[in-house]
Length: 523
Image (tube, rainbow, N blue to C red):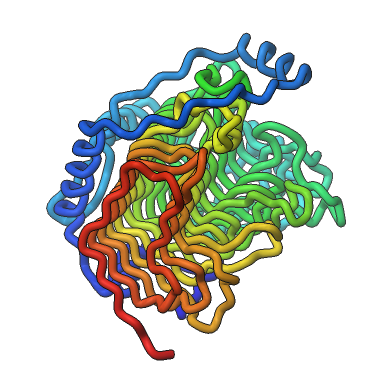
């Protein structure tokens, strides 16, 4: 069974996926197929949700919270989905990459000087506070700042527009929070979260949040988008490449709005971030998520790896700590050839009850190893029959996924292992999904894929299961009043020896199965 750790090189993910799945997919072809499936699904009417019972009343405190946040919010809307491009080499990128490339070239023209932080008094001995040296080197921006090999202590770095910060490589150049930095410190962030910044690049550096300075603190984060290794809030055009996040109190990388926003479903925060590419970023020990996005648009995350969260931003045993989380109000996000291991969720696409859901999210290639829930798509608080229907949980396309041995975890003690969960979302296409379990592991009769809680218009195509001897079903579609419906399953192969390869709950009105092949194995 495959094992990945913090030293894993995510540039190998595409090759590793081919080894795991036993097939070298032509991304140009399978992306075209997935887009056709998605367009077909959009053209079909799906079963409406059951007649709603009265929604549960919102508490006074929650009402006040929503009213206050609406002062800083705007109505949510669906964008035109990003078109996915696959070139002759099989490289995958969004149709807006041309815009990003133009701005990158403009950045190189505008930056008219290059400096070395050492020339401003920085010492990379892991002992000297270099905060003022970085501040002098960066100045008002329009500068490329070189950070040589060493460990550079700081109480936080703020980047104005047109700033390029470059180290000598992960594990070679380390920027580390000073022992006296407060719990809420962001190690690196943009200079002005309210007015916004633009054209920022961070590359070739390890970012150590130095959680040890907090001792045995039960909770390692404060509030909002604080307490992270790198936070971009209200930024337009940014590149984060070959950067490592180490033991942050909250997130390794937070692509965010000025403030998180809880104005209710149907609203988004103002001051979101736009046009950002994270490539070859890695992280571990995060208190919440490795990479997260909030109320931000046109985000591209590629060839990256997140593993082994601490979960210490949450109450012990209730840590929703994900490798990659596409959260509240995020739109048009593309994930390409990433990996995760030993997280609560490998990839979670979601929203909180009092915020808009992420929409138009595309995953092309992901390896999940020993995550509790490899792929978790949900709008919290919009699941029960008494909950309001989600106004914003739409449009997920996932291609070439691999789940390796999902497990129970101390991060979230009550959560059963899953290869995938789909809840509340409409218009979901999963195309080519390989799920490999451990035949000796006790899954306690739980299903491996669960489609549930008012999910609609879900297409699952080319699924392959093996090794889940002690699971209850490879795929379970939940029935009842708040059932999933309008589900189509095609080309499913199972070698799982589960009691029921497919378990369909009561009351579904629109469920189609085509070409399901069951092969029993002897263990």
